[in-house]
Amino acid sequence: MLRSSCLICASSVEPFISFGKMPIANGFLTAAQLADEYFYELDVVFCPTCGMVQLGHLVEPEKMFHENYAFFSSTSTRMAKHFEQFADSVAAVLSPRSDPLVVEIGSNDGIMLRHFAERGTRHLGVEPSKNVAEIASSRGVRTISRFFDEDLAREILEQHGPADAVLGANVMCHIANIHSVVAGVKRLLKPEGVLVFEDPYLGDIVELTSYDQIYDEHVFYFSVRSLSALFAMHDLEIVDVQRQPVHGGSMRYVVGHEGARVASARVVRQTAKEAELGLGEARTFVDLRERIERSRGMLRQALDSLRAGGNRVVGYGATSKSTTVINYCGITAEHLEFISDTTPIKQGKRSPGAHIPVRPYAEFQRQYPDYALLFAWNHSQEILAKEGDFMRQGGRFLVYVPEVHLVDSDQA
Ligand code: DWN
Ligand code: SAH
Image (cartoon, rainbow, N blue to C red):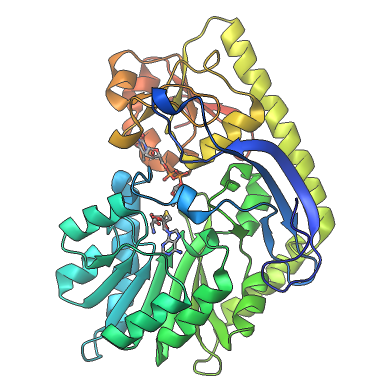
Protein backbone atom coordinates (compact mmCIF):
# COMPACT_ATOMS: atom_id res chain seq x y z
CA MET A 1 0.00 0.00 0.00
CA LEU A 2 1.11 3.55 -0.75
CA ARG A 3 2.57 5.11 2.42
CA SER A 4 0.30 7.85 3.76
CA SER A 5 2.71 9.56 6.18
CA CYS A 6 5.93 11.49 5.68
CA LEU A 7 9.21 9.73 6.53
CA ILE A 8 10.51 13.04 7.91
CA CYS A 9 7.69 14.70 9.86
CA ALA A 10 4.94 12.00 9.93
CA SER A 11 2.32 14.37 8.45
CA SER A 12 -0.05 13.17 5.71
CA VAL A 13 1.49 13.06 2.25
CA GLU A 14 -0.12 13.63 -1.15
CA PRO A 15 0.44 11.39 -4.18
CA PHE A 16 2.45 12.99 -7.00
CA ILE A 17 3.11 10.38 -9.69
CA SER A 18 3.00 6.62 -10.28
CA PHE A 19 5.36 5.04 -12.79
CA GLY A 20 3.86 1.56 -12.37
CA LYS A 21 5.79 -1.64 -11.75
CA MET A 22 9.56 -1.20 -11.84
CA PRO A 23 12.53 -3.52 -11.46
CA ILE A 24 15.60 -2.78 -9.31
CA ALA A 25 17.36 0.10 -11.14
CA ASN A 26 20.81 -1.50 -10.89
CA GLY A 27 19.49 -5.08 -11.14
CA PHE A 28 21.30 -6.13 -14.34
CA LEU A 29 20.47 -9.76 -15.04
CA THR A 30 22.27 -12.88 -16.19
CA ALA A 31 20.31 -15.27 -18.45
CA ALA A 32 19.54 -17.46 -15.42
CA GLN A 33 18.01 -14.53 -13.50
CA LEU A 34 15.58 -13.35 -16.18
CA ALA A 35 12.66 -15.51 -15.06
CA ASP A 36 12.33 -14.38 -11.43
CA GLU A 37 13.00 -10.69 -11.54
CA TYR A 38 11.81 -8.58 -8.59
CA PHE A 39 9.35 -5.71 -9.21
CA TYR A 40 7.88 -3.04 -6.94
CA GLU A 41 5.56 -0.04 -7.45
CA LEU A 42 7.50 3.13 -8.23
CA ASP A 43 5.54 6.11 -7.04
CA VAL A 44 6.34 9.42 -5.47
CA VAL A 45 4.52 11.39 -2.79
CA PHE A 46 4.92 14.95 -1.55
CA CYS A 47 4.63 16.26 2.02
CA PRO A 48 2.84 19.63 2.10
CA THR A 49 4.01 20.15 5.72
CA CYS A 50 7.82 19.83 5.50
CA GLY A 51 8.11 19.82 1.69
CA MET A 52 9.93 16.48 1.38
CA VAL A 53 9.36 14.64 -1.89
CA GLN A 54 9.82 10.90 -1.33
CA LEU A 55 9.03 7.41 -2.63
CA GLY A 56 5.63 5.99 -1.73
CA HIS A 57 6.88 2.38 -1.62
CA LEU A 58 10.30 1.41 -0.32
CA VAL A 59 12.60 -1.35 -1.51
CA GLU A 60 14.66 -3.15 1.16
CA PRO A 61 18.23 -1.76 1.13
CA GLU A 62 19.70 -5.29 0.95
CA LYS A 63 17.95 -5.85 -2.39
CA MET A 64 19.84 -2.86 -3.86
CA PHE A 65 23.18 -2.64 -2.06
CA HIS A 66 25.09 -5.91 -1.89
CA GLU A 67 28.15 -7.79 -3.15
CA ASN A 68 27.08 -7.38 -6.79
CA TYR A 69 26.31 -3.65 -6.78
CA ALA A 70 26.62 -2.48 -10.38
CA PHE A 71 27.53 1.21 -9.95
CA PHE A 72 31.25 1.94 -9.69
CA SER A 73 31.86 5.63 -9.00
CA SER A 74 35.19 5.83 -10.79
CA THR A 75 33.75 5.17 -14.29
CA SER A 76 33.57 8.92 -15.00
CA THR A 77 36.79 10.93 -15.27
CA ARG A 78 34.85 14.14 -14.66
CA MET A 79 33.42 12.74 -11.42
CA ALA A 80 36.92 11.64 -10.36
CA LYS A 81 38.04 15.27 -10.76
CA HIS A 82 34.93 16.54 -8.98
CA PHE A 83 35.60 14.36 -5.94
CA GLU A 84 39.27 15.30 -5.89
CA GLN A 85 38.17 18.95 -5.64
CA PHE A 86 35.56 18.06 -2.98
CA ALA A 87 38.29 16.32 -0.94
CA ASP A 88 40.71 19.23 -1.45
CA SER A 89 38.16 21.74 -0.15
CA VAL A 90 37.56 19.68 3.02
CA ALA A 91 41.28 19.00 3.51
CA ALA A 92 42.01 22.74 3.34
CA VAL A 93 39.63 23.38 6.27
CA LEU A 94 41.04 20.49 8.30
CA SER A 95 44.72 21.20 7.68
CA PRO A 96 45.34 23.33 10.82
CA ARG A 97 43.79 20.65 13.07
CA SER A 98 45.80 17.95 14.75
CA ASP A 99 45.06 14.40 13.56
CA PRO A 100 41.54 15.04 12.17
CA LEU A 101 39.13 12.18 11.37
CA VAL A 102 37.05 12.09 8.18
CA VAL A 103 34.19 9.58 7.82
CA GLU A 104 32.46 9.06 4.48
CA ILE A 105 29.04 7.46 4.16
CA GLY A 106 28.59 5.55 0.87
CA SER A 107 32.26 5.75 -0.12
CA ASN A 108 31.83 3.25 -2.98
CA ASP A 109 35.16 2.46 -4.70
CA GLY A 110 37.02 5.15 -2.76
CA ILE A 111 36.71 7.86 -5.42
CA MET A 112 36.78 10.62 -2.77
CA LEU A 113 38.44 9.09 0.31
CA ARG A 114 41.55 8.04 -1.62
CA HIS A 115 42.59 11.68 -1.56
CA PHE A 116 42.54 11.62 2.25
CA ALA A 117 44.33 8.24 2.31
CA GLU A 118 47.04 9.69 0.04
CA ARG A 119 47.49 12.65 2.41
CA GLY A 120 47.79 10.28 5.39
CA THR A 121 44.63 11.74 6.98
CA ARG A 122 42.73 9.47 9.38
CA HIS A 123 39.65 8.34 7.49
CA LEU A 124 36.96 5.67 7.40
CA GLY A 125 34.60 4.73 4.58
CA VAL A 126 31.25 3.10 5.33
CA GLU A 127 30.11 1.19 2.27
CA PRO A 128 27.58 -1.69 2.45
CA SER A 129 28.10 -2.90 -1.14
CA LYS A 130 30.95 -5.36 -0.60
CA ASN A 131 32.33 -5.49 -4.13
CA VAL A 132 32.92 -1.75 -4.40
CA ALA A 133 34.07 -1.56 -0.74
CA GLU A 134 36.75 -4.16 -1.56
CA ILE A 135 38.04 -2.06 -4.44
CA ALA A 136 38.35 0.92 -2.09
CA SER A 137 40.25 -1.22 0.47
CA SER A 138 42.58 -2.46 -2.25
CA ARG A 139 43.36 1.19 -3.05
CA GLY A 140 44.43 1.82 0.54
CA VAL A 141 41.13 3.36 1.65
CA ARG A 142 40.12 2.14 5.09
CA THR A 143 36.56 0.84 4.60
CA ILE A 144 33.96 -1.08 6.57
CA SER A 145 31.23 -2.84 4.66
CA ARG A 146 28.14 -1.93 6.68
CA PHE A 147 25.06 0.28 6.43
CA PHE A 148 25.57 3.55 8.28
CA ASP A 149 23.03 4.23 11.04
CA GLU A 150 23.00 5.44 14.65
CA ASP A 151 24.25 2.11 16.05
CA LEU A 152 27.22 2.08 13.71
CA ALA A 153 27.94 5.74 14.54
CA ARG A 154 28.20 4.72 18.22
CA GLU A 155 30.68 1.96 17.34
CA ILE A 156 32.77 4.30 15.19
CA LEU A 157 32.82 6.85 18.01
CA GLU A 158 34.04 4.22 20.48
CA GLN A 159 36.78 2.92 18.19
CA HIS A 160 37.98 6.08 16.47
CA GLY A 161 36.70 9.01 18.51
CA PRO A 162 34.65 11.96 17.21
CA ALA A 163 34.81 13.09 13.58
CA ASP A 164 35.88 16.46 12.23
CA ALA A 165 33.93 15.88 9.03
CA VAL A 166 31.32 13.39 7.90
CA LEU A 167 31.03 13.36 4.12
CA GLY A 168 28.50 11.89 1.70
CA ALA A 169 27.79 12.14 -2.01
CA ASN A 170 24.68 10.70 -3.61
CA VAL A 171 23.96 8.63 -0.54
CA MET A 172 21.88 10.56 2.02
CA CYS A 173 18.93 10.59 -0.40
CA HIS A 174 19.25 6.79 -0.65
CA ILE A 175 18.56 6.03 3.01
CA ALA A 176 14.95 5.63 4.21
CA ASN A 177 15.91 5.47 7.90
CA ILE A 178 17.37 8.96 7.55
CA HIS A 179 16.49 9.89 11.14
CA SER A 180 18.82 7.17 12.40
CA VAL A 181 21.56 8.37 10.02
CA VAL A 182 21.20 12.02 11.09
CA ALA A 183 21.08 11.05 14.78
CA GLY A 184 24.28 9.06 14.17
CA VAL A 185 25.98 12.01 12.49
CA LYS A 186 24.93 14.28 15.37
CA ARG A 187 26.51 11.85 17.84
CA LEU A 188 29.69 11.39 15.80
CA LEU A 189 30.57 15.02 15.04
CA LYS A 190 32.92 17.06 17.22
CA PRO A 191 31.36 20.33 18.48
CA GLU A 192 33.07 22.17 15.60
CA GLY A 193 32.59 19.26 13.18
CA VAL A 194 30.57 19.42 9.96
CA LEU A 195 28.52 17.14 7.77
CA VAL A 196 29.17 17.94 4.10
CA PHE A 197 27.05 16.09 1.57
CA GLU A 198 25.56 16.50 -1.90
CA ASP A 199 22.66 14.97 -3.75
CA PRO A 200 20.59 15.64 -6.88
CA TYR A 201 18.55 18.79 -6.22
CA LEU A 202 14.76 18.85 -6.41
CA GLY A 203 14.85 22.33 -8.00
CA ASP A 204 16.80 20.93 -10.97
CA ILE A 205 14.53 17.91 -11.31
CA VAL A 206 11.53 20.27 -11.53
CA GLU A 207 13.26 22.71 -13.89
CA LEU A 208 14.72 20.04 -16.21
CA THR A 209 11.87 17.49 -15.98
CA SER A 210 14.63 15.01 -15.17
CA TYR A 211 12.22 12.38 -13.90
CA ASP A 212 14.77 9.65 -14.51
CA GLN A 213 16.34 10.65 -11.17
CA ILE A 214 13.36 8.82 -9.68
CA TYR A 215 14.07 5.14 -8.96
CA ASP A 216 14.28 2.71 -6.03
CA GLU A 217 17.65 3.91 -4.67
CA HIS A 218 16.53 7.54 -4.54
CA VAL A 219 14.14 7.55 -1.59
CA PHE A 220 14.24 11.36 -1.17
CA TYR A 221 14.36 14.37 -3.53
CA PHE A 222 15.88 17.05 -1.32
CA SER A 223 15.32 20.79 -1.11
CA VAL A 224 16.92 23.21 1.33
CA ARG A 225 13.54 23.67 2.97
CA SER A 226 12.79 19.97 3.53
CA LEU A 227 16.33 19.27 4.77
CA SER A 228 16.18 22.25 7.14
CA ALA A 229 13.08 20.65 8.69
CA LEU A 230 14.91 17.32 9.04
CA PHE A 231 18.08 18.76 10.61
CA ALA A 232 16.14 21.00 13.01
CA MET A 233 14.62 17.83 14.50
CA HIS A 234 18.17 16.77 15.46
CA ASP A 235 19.51 20.14 16.67
CA LEU A 236 21.60 20.49 13.54
CA GLU A 237 21.40 23.26 10.95
CA ILE A 238 22.37 23.91 7.36
CA VAL A 239 25.10 26.57 7.39
CA ASP A 240 25.91 26.66 3.68
CA VAL A 241 24.61 25.45 0.33
CA GLN A 242 26.52 25.31 -2.96
CA ARG A 243 25.12 24.33 -6.37
CA GLN A 244 27.14 21.60 -8.10
CA PRO A 245 27.06 21.07 -11.88
CA VAL A 246 27.18 17.25 -11.61
CA HIS A 247 24.62 14.47 -11.98
CA GLY A 248 22.24 16.80 -13.76
CA GLY A 249 22.24 19.45 -11.01
CA SER A 250 23.18 18.75 -7.40
CA MET A 251 23.31 20.73 -4.18
CA ARG A 252 26.06 20.49 -1.58
CA TYR A 253 24.98 21.13 2.01
CA VAL A 254 27.24 22.01 4.92
CA VAL A 255 25.60 21.17 8.24
CA GLY A 256 26.80 21.96 11.76
CA HIS A 257 25.54 21.66 15.34
CA GLU A 258 22.79 24.21 15.97
CA GLY A 259 24.25 27.59 16.86
CA ALA A 260 27.88 26.52 16.33
CA ARG A 261 28.37 28.53 13.12
CA VAL A 262 26.97 31.55 11.36
CA ALA A 263 24.85 30.44 8.40
CA SER A 264 25.76 31.88 5.00
CA ALA A 265 23.30 34.21 3.26
CA ARG A 266 23.14 31.60 0.49
CA VAL A 267 20.94 29.39 2.69
CA VAL A 268 18.29 32.10 3.07
CA ARG A 269 18.55 33.06 -0.62
CA GLN A 270 18.14 29.48 -1.82
CA THR A 271 15.17 28.88 0.48
CA ALA A 272 13.51 32.01 -0.96
CA LYS A 273 14.27 30.80 -4.50
CA GLU A 274 12.58 27.50 -3.69
CA ALA A 275 9.44 29.34 -2.59
CA GLU A 276 9.48 31.28 -5.89
CA LEU A 277 9.87 28.01 -7.82
CA GLY A 278 6.86 26.63 -5.92
CA LEU A 279 8.80 23.66 -4.54
CA GLY A 280 6.47 23.52 -1.55
CA GLU A 281 3.24 23.58 -3.53
CA ALA A 282 1.17 20.70 -4.83
CA ARG A 283 0.45 22.43 -8.18
CA THR A 284 4.19 22.34 -9.02
CA PHE A 285 4.06 18.56 -8.93
CA VAL A 286 0.83 18.40 -10.93
CA ASP A 287 2.59 20.49 -13.64
CA LEU A 288 5.70 18.33 -13.41
CA ARG A 289 3.63 15.17 -13.80
CA GLU A 290 2.08 16.58 -16.97
CA ARG A 291 5.50 17.46 -18.37
CA ILE A 292 6.78 13.96 -17.54
CA GLU A 293 3.85 12.38 -19.38
CA ARG A 294 4.45 14.64 -22.38
CA SER A 295 8.14 13.80 -22.37
CA ARG A 296 7.32 10.09 -22.43
CA GLY A 297 5.07 10.59 -25.47
CA MET A 298 7.74 12.57 -27.35
CA LEU A 299 10.51 10.07 -26.66
CA ARG A 300 8.37 7.11 -27.69
CA GLN A 301 7.35 8.90 -30.86
CA ALA A 302 11.00 9.68 -31.71
CA LEU A 303 12.11 6.09 -31.11
CA ASP A 304 9.14 4.58 -32.96
CA SER A 305 9.84 6.70 -36.02
CA LEU A 306 13.58 5.94 -35.98
CA ARG A 307 12.74 2.26 -35.86
CA ALA A 308 10.17 2.61 -38.66
CA GLY A 309 12.87 4.34 -40.74
CA GLY A 310 15.19 1.34 -40.32
CA ASN A 311 17.82 3.20 -38.27
CA ARG A 312 20.28 1.50 -35.96
CA VAL A 313 19.79 2.95 -32.47
CA VAL A 314 21.71 1.98 -29.32
CA GLY A 315 21.57 3.22 -25.72
CA TYR A 316 24.63 5.04 -24.37
CA GLY A 317 25.27 4.32 -20.65
CA ALA A 318 23.31 1.66 -18.76
CA THR A 319 22.54 4.13 -15.98
CA SER A 320 20.23 3.54 -13.01
CA LYS A 321 18.22 6.41 -14.43
CA SER A 322 17.71 4.53 -17.71
CA THR A 323 15.76 1.82 -15.88
CA THR A 324 12.99 4.34 -15.16
CA VAL A 325 13.00 5.79 -18.68
CA ILE A 326 13.09 2.43 -20.46
CA ASN A 327 10.33 0.81 -18.43
CA TYR A 328 8.11 3.88 -18.06
CA CYS A 329 8.30 4.76 -21.78
CA GLY A 330 7.96 1.15 -22.95
CA ILE A 331 11.34 1.10 -24.72
CA THR A 332 12.28 -2.42 -25.83
CA ALA A 333 15.00 -4.38 -27.63
CA GLU A 334 13.03 -3.54 -30.79
CA HIS A 335 13.98 0.12 -30.31
CA LEU A 336 17.54 -0.35 -29.01
CA GLU A 337 19.90 -2.95 -30.42
CA PHE A 338 21.91 -2.84 -27.19
CA ILE A 339 23.09 -0.46 -24.48
CA SER A 340 26.79 0.39 -24.47
CA ASP A 341 28.47 0.65 -21.05
CA THR A 342 32.06 0.76 -19.82
CA THR A 343 31.35 -1.06 -16.53
CA PRO A 344 32.50 -4.72 -16.75
CA ILE A 345 29.91 -6.03 -14.24
CA LYS A 346 27.03 -4.76 -16.43
CA GLN A 347 28.41 -6.12 -19.72
CA GLY A 348 26.94 -9.33 -21.12
CA LYS A 349 23.88 -8.90 -18.89
CA ARG A 350 20.34 -7.71 -19.66
CA SER A 351 18.88 -4.41 -18.57
CA PRO A 352 16.35 -4.50 -15.70
CA GLY A 353 12.75 -4.99 -16.83
CA ALA A 354 13.07 -4.64 -20.60
CA HIS A 355 16.00 -7.09 -20.84
CA ILE A 356 17.89 -5.12 -23.49
CA PRO A 357 21.45 -6.51 -23.91
CA VAL A 358 24.24 -4.47 -22.29
CA ARG A 359 27.47 -4.62 -24.29
CA PRO A 360 31.00 -3.30 -23.87
CA TYR A 361 31.86 0.14 -25.24
CA ALA A 362 34.06 -1.53 -27.88
CA GLU A 363 30.85 -2.74 -29.57
CA PHE A 364 29.70 0.84 -29.95
CA GLN A 365 33.03 1.84 -31.47
CA ARG A 366 33.26 -1.21 -33.71
CA GLN A 367 30.29 -0.18 -35.81
CA TYR A 368 28.79 3.18 -34.95
CA PRO A 369 24.97 3.20 -34.90
CA ASP A 370 22.93 5.93 -36.61
CA TYR A 371 21.65 7.22 -33.27
CA ALA A 372 22.69 6.86 -29.63
CA LEU A 373 20.07 7.44 -26.94
CA LEU A 374 22.06 9.28 -24.28
CA PHE A 375 21.02 7.69 -20.98
CA ALA A 376 24.13 9.16 -19.30
CA TRP A 377 23.01 12.72 -20.19
CA ASN A 378 24.40 13.95 -16.86
CA HIS A 379 27.89 13.21 -18.25
CA SER A 380 27.15 14.79 -21.65
CA GLN A 381 30.09 17.21 -21.48
CA GLU A 382 32.55 14.33 -20.98
CA ILE A 383 30.81 12.07 -23.51
CA LEU A 384 30.26 14.59 -26.34
CA ALA A 385 33.92 15.62 -26.02
CA LYS A 386 35.10 12.06 -26.67
CA GLU A 387 32.53 11.05 -29.31
CA GLY A 388 33.62 13.47 -32.04
CA ASP A 389 34.31 10.57 -34.44
CA PHE A 390 30.84 9.12 -34.01
CA MET A 391 29.21 12.48 -34.76
CA ARG A 392 31.60 13.37 -37.62
CA GLN A 393 30.57 10.12 -39.27
CA GLY A 394 26.94 11.30 -39.17
CA GLY A 395 25.94 9.79 -35.81
CA ARG A 396 23.55 11.72 -33.60
CA PHE A 397 22.73 11.65 -29.94
CA LEU A 398 19.06 11.51 -28.98
CA VAL A 399 18.69 13.33 -25.64
CA TYR A 400 15.49 13.67 -23.55
CA VAL A 401 16.54 16.22 -20.88
CA PRO A 402 15.32 18.94 -20.59
CA GLU A 403 13.27 17.92 -23.63
CA VAL A 404 13.57 15.46 -26.49
CA HIS A 405 16.16 16.71 -29.02
CA LEU A 406 19.00 15.59 -31.28
CA VAL A 407 22.66 16.56 -30.95
CA ASP A 408 24.99 16.28 -33.94
CA SER A 409 28.54 17.46 -34.64
CA ASP A 410 27.37 21.05 -35.21
CA GLN A 411 25.77 21.41 -31.78
CA ALA A 412 28.24 19.35 -29.70
O1 DWN B 1 23.09 8.22 -7.06
C1 DWN B 1 23.66 7.42 -7.76
C2 DWN B 1 24.63 7.91 -8.77
C3 DWN B 1 25.75 8.69 -8.17
O2 DWN B 1 25.20 6.86 -9.48
C4 DWN B 1 23.42 5.98 -7.60
N1 DWN B 1 22.10 5.77 -7.10
C5 DWN B 1 23.65 5.15 -8.82
C6 DWN B 1 24.35 5.85 -9.94
O3 DWN B 1 23.39 6.40 -10.83
P1 DWN B 1 23.56 6.21 -12.42
O4 DWN B 1 23.76 4.78 -12.72
O5 DWN B 1 22.42 6.89 -13.07
O6 DWN B 1 24.94 7.00 -12.58
P2 DWN B 1 25.73 7.56 -13.81
O7 DWN B 1 27.00 8.13 -13.30
O8 DWN B 1 24.90 8.45 -14.65
O9 DWN B 1 26.07 6.25 -14.65
C7 DWN B 1 26.80 6.34 -15.83
C8 DWN B 1 26.85 4.98 -16.50
O10 DWN B 1 27.31 5.17 -17.83
C9 DWN B 1 27.81 4.02 -15.83
O11 DWN B 1 27.32 2.71 -15.96
C10 DWN B 1 29.08 4.18 -16.65
C11 DWN B 1 28.54 4.49 -18.02
N2 DWN B 1 29.41 5.37 -18.80
C12 DWN B 1 29.82 4.97 -20.06
O12 DWN B 1 29.47 3.87 -20.54
N3 DWN B 1 30.63 5.81 -20.77
C13 DWN B 1 29.76 6.58 -18.28
C14 DWN B 1 30.58 7.44 -18.99
C15 DWN B 1 30.99 8.78 -18.44
C16 DWN B 1 31.04 7.02 -20.30
O13 DWN B 1 31.76 7.75 -20.98
N1 SAH C 1 29.40 8.31 -3.16
C1 SAH C 1 29.48 7.63 -4.43
C2 SAH C 1 28.49 6.46 -4.55
C3 SAH C 1 27.06 6.84 -4.78
S1 SAH C 1 26.03 5.40 -5.08
C4 SAH C 1 29.31 8.61 -5.58
O1 SAH C 1 28.77 9.70 -5.39
O2 SAH C 1 29.66 8.24 -6.69
C5 SAH C 1 25.31 5.18 -3.47
C6 SAH C 1 26.22 4.41 -2.54
O3 SAH C 1 25.69 4.46 -1.22
C7 SAH C 1 26.34 2.93 -2.91
O4 SAH C 1 27.70 2.61 -3.04
C8 SAH C 1 25.65 2.22 -1.75
O5 SAH C 1 26.18 0.95 -1.46
C9 SAH C 1 25.83 3.20 -0.60
N2 SAH C 1 24.85 3.13 0.50
C10 SAH C 1 23.53 2.86 0.43
N3 SAH C 1 22.98 2.89 1.67
C11 SAH C 1 23.96 3.18 2.55
C12 SAH C 1 24.03 3.33 3.97
N4 SAH C 1 22.97 3.18 4.76
N5 SAH C 1 25.23 3.61 4.54
C13 SAH C 1 26.34 3.77 3.76
N6 SAH C 1 26.32 3.64 2.41
C14 SAH C 1 25.16 3.34 1.81
